[in-house]
Image (cartoon, rainbow over all chains, first blue to last red; front, top):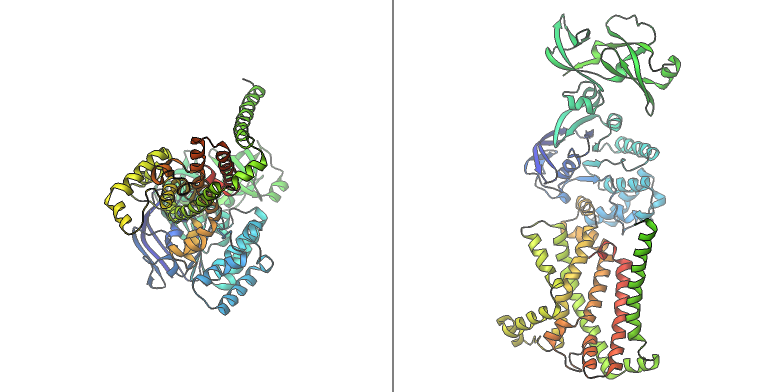
Length: 348
Length: 262
């Protein structure tokens, strides 16, 4: 297990304060945060590239806080590959094993395993400048994996790639995780990648961890307005909550009250994820749901979905599938009915 | 001024500048015939000057690179107190007239206890070929350091970070990654140091003097022969200096990368 306790580091341009994280062995852990949050610096401090000012890094019960990078069983992959340009792919992969003084037999054996896992037999004798982005990232992953690290740090490993190549590398990452059962800490600013890959996630902002937990729980139950915004809650309202028979009556505006399953009372922020809201052209007859009626004021297309802005007295953002949108033939200015469960309303 | 007039103006200035430089060079190389030029180049005096220039410039270039490779790295990658001051002082010989640097060297080796101590162990720098090397070194090492610093600046430090996570110490990461990646900068830095070494005059004149067939490098040969009215030998030496300068600048343009900006 990797335990990070009260870790602080000030590198001038970036700093981080009191970072606390626990990553189980064999876990795929994602650190999600906006650009400039200090995610890369955190990875670099874990790898030992920069020293911590205070706090501890404990890996499998060994305090590695003051160990140099070469003495930490940790490999790191950067977004921009950092393959050594003066070496072929094969020599890049063997670089670490050679530096560590492994026997030729061991070097060949481990290289072969990594090359087969990443399926890069055809590019071994090529120099990095001749490779595509996807090939470079595969070679970089092989170079890190060949060291058989206890922890594999991935700094935005697919951000520099085009979308189809991103998909392929994400599949490779899943395959690596499945077949090696390695502990992975993956840094990204992409919510979608965090959900797809992370068993647990941490949300980071301005050098601080804002929330940690199971990815679906963090997305559904953000603990702050920043996290709610960052994980795409979209509908975040100032509201007043009153408890009544185990549910919370949440007043969003004078005439708009909804129900939430929460024990929070008083002034709150009410968050409703846009994909939790059902849309219908006719009134929805269902108990236990919050029901609102409104007018569509904007329709915009996303990669795989459609997004509606609906004025119900408050402005709600709703996400529906492209098929539902086509089936209902929705138009701006049209009246529609919205419904969402009390469990879909999260109070902060 | 419209776009066409602006293009015409800047283009004209560029053309005039190129024409001016080419004319000055042609004045030198066409002053004599090819046969006379070859004969003069093959004279004992010019052959001596070529040999002395080649040897001293090569040795001083090696010395420059031995210093420039680590110092350029320190100035590029490390943060330490008074770094800006150190950088400024290292660059000072670039702004000083070489004659002034030469006077400083003459006083250092001729008058100080260090200079005298070196002389007692056989290292005599004043009015000797050894002085030529030291003078070339002092004038050229700031260029070499500047180019190396610029080269390291252009190499992402993350290469070294990755090397460290792959079992390298800081020094091993430098030797195995940064240094091989700096090869174009090293080549450019060596080429400019060597060419400037061959052409160095002022500091060499002050420290090593201008003694025919003893401390007579190519620029000293130009100076001595111009002074004594032997224009043909002066032109032979000058032509070689022009060729050396052209080749060095070509290498710098070809391999210098960001290091060209100095």
